Structures are given as C-alpha cells and as structure tokens.
Image 1 (cartoon, rainbow, N blue to C red):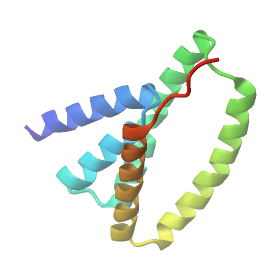
Image 2 (cartoon, rainbow, N blue to C red; image 1 turned 90 degrees about the vertical axis):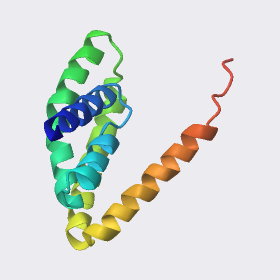
Image 3 (cartoon, helix red, strand yellow; image 1 turned 180 degrees about the horizontal axis):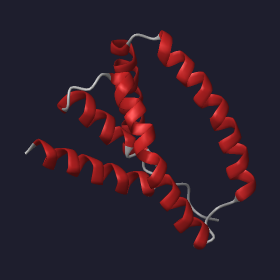
Length: 122
C-alpha cells in the first residue's frame, strides 16, 4: 500500500510541476510527513524528481511558443545564483527549522492564492 501512496504523490507532483504550480510542495510534504524522510533529503529528492518533468514541460511549452526566452534566460541566470545561495544556506540551517520555514512559505502562498484578485484587462 505504501507504494500506492508514493505513486500518487509522485504523479500529482509531476502534473502540478509540469503546469508550473509547484508540485514540489506535495512531494516534500509527502516525503517528510508520510515517508519519514528528513527535510534536507526530501528537498534533494524533489530537485532530482523535477529534472525530467521540467524538461518535458519545457519542450511542450516551447512547441506552443509560450516561452519568452529573454525573460527565461534572465530568470534562470538569477535562479542559479539563488540555488547556490539556498544550497549553502540549507547546509547551515537545522532541518527542523528548515521544515518550519517551508511550512510558513506554503502557508503564505496559500493565503495569497485565496485572496488574489486578477486585475481587469484593459
């Protein structure tokens, strides 16, 4: 039965991640709360998990001409800098604190989504 929950969490994470909706939240929550994986390791597994998902999503979005390459290059370049900083910080922050920070981030994002109002189109 455990493999079924793992498969469901992986599938849901892949679908949400490919749609750009942060499937890592589901995967990390599953790994830490239900599979007993330590927070730092769950984050590493999450990053490896999303490499193939991101490549597939990128190909599909590229074929549909939904990528602004100039903006994508700028964001990805700065994302690499952020990833390096985040990786370094994760080695000096205790796993329990890291888990709490992740929970607070998810809570803030959820509240924002609940109360977000789209600006009317011109």
